[in-house]
Length: 522
Image 1: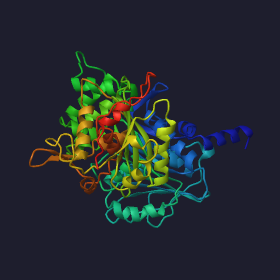
Image 2: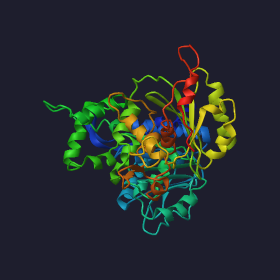
Image 3: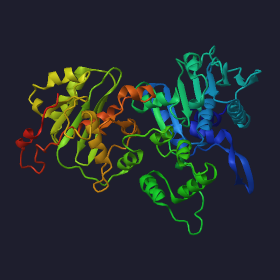
Image 4: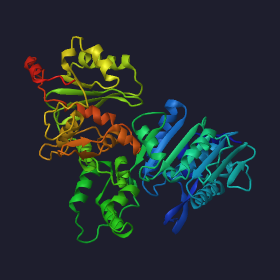
């Protein structure tokens, strides 16, 4: 082997993007003109969605030495093609590794196997390994002692159970049959895998993908959440027809997502797609082609207390200045929940620390840090839920020098400012937060976070016999597969009571009169 050939092989081994473009071929959705002729089999050059996924996965691998990822995406954005190519690259450049792909239907398994065989058939002979075939959907690279196999998530859930898996790709996970058996079967075989990538379009509140997505989105566990919006695809565009004018909703969508790549041509395609393929069902379109992660799960018919459109508008807004008192809400963990800190200053809210484990010492340390080290924009008030872990935390900080500015809040308390409107304190705080979010006259800006939007739009609500609002409890939410809205509760705590700015941020001094405006609610 010459030095030049060695250099070529090394780059093909170490650079997947280069390997894909030079060695892998895919079947294009539409013929592409190349060398004067239309071509359907073309080089695999990563599109925008695939580039984004590749960067996120590589980043996780560099940080953790392994990949655990959930990918939520729209229809036919090339995710399965990307993972298939990534794993083919790794399997054909390593000795003694097993790759396993699990799909939701037999036809999907057949299509992915055809794709992998196309990769292998068109690979550069310089890096194509020797292959023997078995009777099942499998490529065996005999001299490498490695294999690439596929299966379907069938009725018994036993597929892949006996293998030892190094690279595992789950395709359309939300549509798998018997997901519980699969988790105790093939997932155990892949327990020590170097990479596990699970991808799917949404399927309502399915029993496996949705709970895993919620945990990953909230930063719980080892999986990362990767969302890919539909409008990153160039093929999801059409030329604007003569006289085409956007609707009010389309204009709003364009304003929200223009910075992320949405164009009027995307919206023209969207309108046509809803009318033709979805018979006017916009909600179903959002599940199949979501703009954000929270939108993908809207098809359940759940009547959320805070509407998704209000949350998404607030998270995309950037022209709001913070002013007035800086308030911090602290929602300590209950059971397996997170401990979340959230900041609000006037019409602007931003995330603070999140603790995944109930580490009382660390949480108290963060409270001390906020009051003693955040001097450029000092904290004026802090409201802390004293249920669960919050009670002992409050007991330890209330007598500290800044303890007078920390106010305990009982979510279940009946002592509310509007007893004619709200059943308890939690409903009142969320009600104030909803009014704040939906105030068109004074727009607000919140963290641009799928996790926060999911929390804000998670709780439903009812009315009691006096027509007072009662927010859905965390226990009721858990029964329908919804995680605890810890970030939402933390932000809601900043609305516990009206307060005044204790610090003159123009440099005049401290307004001590603010303390008289606060009642401590037990």
